[in-house]
Image 1: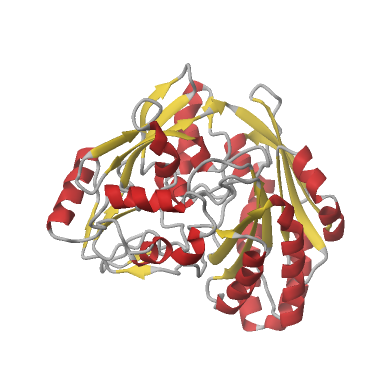
Image 2: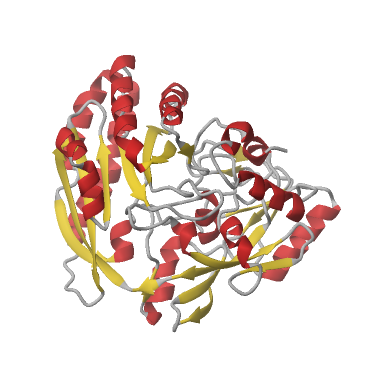
Length: 437
């Protein structure tokens, strides 16, 4: 988000920059003109969506392209269930655009404020061992290359590049259109409840395999897990959505208002964090409802935080989580935000954190007014021991030398970057670190 005075800040307030120029293109042609002008002036150019990445992946020291006006539905192939969207379209807008055609996105994450281009470019994912991340739903895309030309990738044109462009980190060009493979609209039966953490961990593999979508949260300093199990049902299935008042109490009053108070209190008086977490584990969750898929997948977040998330081989999730629990106890930290554990299917996207392997994700958070460095770096050491790959849009310390060893197609990706952007017009400090200069 660009503030008065020309300073851009991300949602988590972990990154900021004062671009030399900010543009708001409304058309693909306007994006092409902006890229050509930036290249002529030897200025780097970056597109930003909603700024929900915690890393500097969208930081634009030169020309910043705000794509919020490049939004909407381009075309629908109803017979094949495919839709093409302009790159700045926000995820929360997509259900309404798809509804007239009886379609839905196959899977979503738990936040829907991102743009479709930002979500796929950073590897945003949801949960469900049989379902990939959002980039795995991409079957075509159009991007503006460093020369200002359009490059289309789909099954007919440059099909071999779809796995690279679908999750391109913003390094290959400016995405302007994205084509998704959708599914028939469906509803989700959601069961959210607190359970004994040891019981959840003991049956973790079975719980993940049996459910369409399973995840859990653990509040440090407690022995409870907040589990979420979603079962996919046909669109015609009876719906029993949360009552408006109950939803407001759970998501706004408790999930946002009281959590904000808890975070503020925990920062001022760290000794209160354990009892606050124990209380939170009692009052959050414990509900059952059925509603349209997008209304169940996404939740409202108003409390700002910083996040680090690592993808692990699915079999390594339990030992890595056990090591994380032990670490928190050993260090005597007071951690107010829950640890989140999710799962995803393997996919073929070159830089996907789930490339070539069924994956589990462990995410750690800290309130945005607290320094996460010590906690995150210690957790990162654990995740690396268990063959972890960091989420591209969430905080981590890795560079190209380490990442190259963790992605079989890393050299293929950087070679494509050399071909499409030899002058590095789309570079920024983050991309220099994770991909090399």
